[in-house]
Image (tube, rainbow, N blue to C red; front, side, top):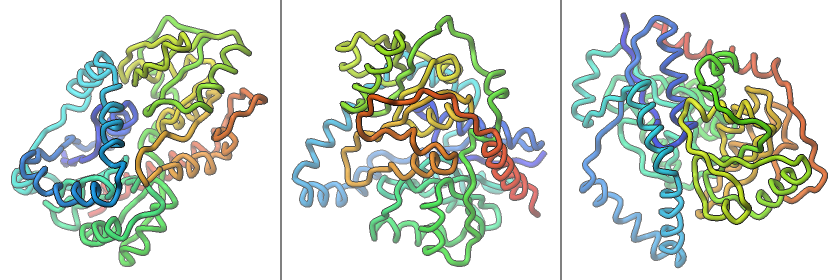
Length: 367
């Protein structure tokens, strides 16, 4: 059996975990053995390397330390029980293998190909480990799968980082059209193609066979990675009062939830999907909660995240909604006349699923 190594994100985020799970499952369905890998970096040397960038941000942005403190607080808003449930799922379903970069170089000889992606594995606004450019293996083994850059307005430094590290890739698939345009200008020799997120490798019925039941009904589901804006809060309250529903929040537990008497439930990746599917409607700032709402044909409203840096990533959501002809689901100002609909986009979904399946199958089966 041929062995495939998969390097992607899979921690502390339902969407990241499930896109990794979907990729692994689909690769295995094609008859390959798939191992999730990650690079174990030396924390001390990593902090030393980051120091010049850290000092530059302090000098150029007088509010940097204040925003950094708020961002750290947001990171702790993921409930401990939800995090524990995520870790249990990771250990059981993904079984990731941590290696140093030198160990990955040695491991290279035992694998036929390596996949990097999906999610924002090439977001150069953040530190990118060398392993996420597959620098430990030969070019013919590299597959860039549904990668996201996380921005449609990259800085010069961002572009230089990518230009240096992706020149070995001859084929790269990206998740957003904006990413496709950026990479075409950086690597003119590579074949760049836009495909869908890995969670779209499978239909709603696959995910329904996977998730666990919950004893809940008649509720609005709230899943926000950052604290919801005033527009989002007012919209949720409007829907709650209009349809006489309860509000259930999952994932990140913000103090503001209790101010509106919204219920918070801990959940796992198994029940995260159940909450989406069983809800009356979904209110979110999450890319993957939006995507699963489309897959399950649920009514949903998506809001801009309350970003605390200069690189908002709204383009990812707009790109997704435009492709599915659901741009009106993006709410950036309060509207008392919202329509709650359950959109069916089966034809578009099947096209995207086929495109993504065909790309991965073709690259894995290439000699």
